[in-house]
Length: 196
Image 1 (tube, rainbow, N blue to C red):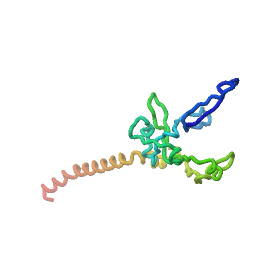
Image 2: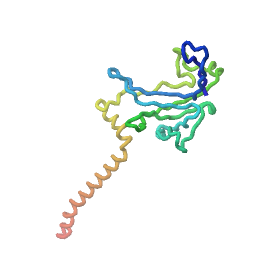
Image 3: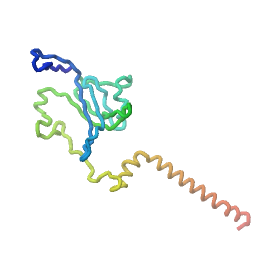
Image 4: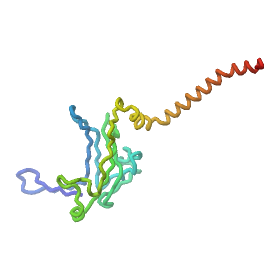
């Protein structure tokens, strides 16, 4: 529990003590240049009782955030000291929870002495020192479909619809083979009957 002490009013003499669970709330916003920023999704984690993160992005879904389910395994960050994995961002759409993104994150609880030895991002210092993170590998080319259609096809369409395309290709080849067979059989039968 986190204990928060504050005065209820400006003129209050006594401070009020409130106990609440420590939580981490993250939001994702689309940073538009001309339009107002769009809210994409949120993730709220109760640090003393949060779901175990997914090991990879494919297994990260909204079901892991359902604390009512018996399948959901929970972890206390203050007991295990370090957690790493993927968590889903979600948003409400017509009363339903919608998966709007995924985040790979590593959280670590350190003591004040450890923090003094290994500080992380004080003021304008570099933030990626403990643990050291490499700069993100961002592609130099864009994913706009009209500037690079092959890249869009490869990374977006082919990844999701690969087996559909392969199935259609096999069906077309089989159809052509059957059409050739049907086209060639009458000539072969006529030649056999005539004896040529």
